[in-house]
Length: 436
Ligand code: PMP
Image (cartoon, rainbow, N blue to C red; front, side, top):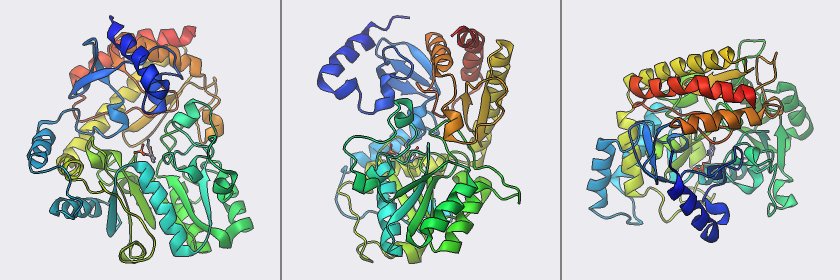
């Protein structure tokens, strides 16, 4: 496989962009080698700058639920863009997108923003503004964007690069952040016992997807971790925030809420709802959202918020995300999980595959580990085995997330042909992992 053009571009990029990339995990630091520079994409495929095709299991880290360059999304984007790309005034499309999100989730109102980071940053301010409390509780390995106060024990690129916090985040900023291990109910109860009346909110990924996929575990009473968090927040006058930036409109029509039915006080959304453009949102009940300016006093704003091009891309994507589409993606995910497990088992590579709906990831664990409930366990995996697996897949034309700590993303265009190409690549990749 010729990759000279990517190498050339990466070398040039490193002179003009820090680390050569505009988001850390794209740099292949965790797996080694030169990142592929992508030039175009269509359906389940991305094509690099040298013209090599790959079956794409990144899907832009989640947004491309319909596959790349969906003709109806492109047509709507073109139609709207030709009528002007930003007005800084309200539009009908924003009302439609808000209504579409509300129709699928328990929120009654949403505010549109431009990125998941902005959504979580804003929702924390709102929760603190409403409760008049300072402290927030998050979980180790959960990533909520690069918000200062949430960059503590964060997953995703921060997990990959081993940066638990970040220089530039002040001690004062994180002093009010309490971190518990994911799925650890005793730790949450202990935190509330100590700080109860000072905790504004608990924020969690609806199902963890940034330390590998770790679903909310079912407890002794049959309720899952999200239900426990909701109840604990209620008992203590705190707000329960579910971050569905990754899971929202992906793991089901209604996201993780559609799978477990736990009603959060506040929610964040992103990725799929922008259809490949910068759009995200946060929402909750009318009563809670009324605290937001201009209705209320908690300030939040954005020049490009509700941008018409991003809004129509998201709206068109959601309208095309039918129950049939989710059924297709769920089936593709189940098949792929089974095939990956079979290939790794055949090669004698210990592993655990976990999922929430169609979102899944593969942990290259020690022998005997059967479940990965938290970040501490996730960190014990053999990342060198993943790196060998990753490169063997890449060489055979399959583009996986370049980190052992990321979910694998499918789209409605991952048909039999695309899945078969992945399946054919698995045995060699599993053998490479075994030898690493
Ligand atoms: N929350 C979650 C759960 C995410 O997965 C991400 C991004 N991977 C974010 C927030 C941040 O979103 P963005 O990258 O759009 O800022």
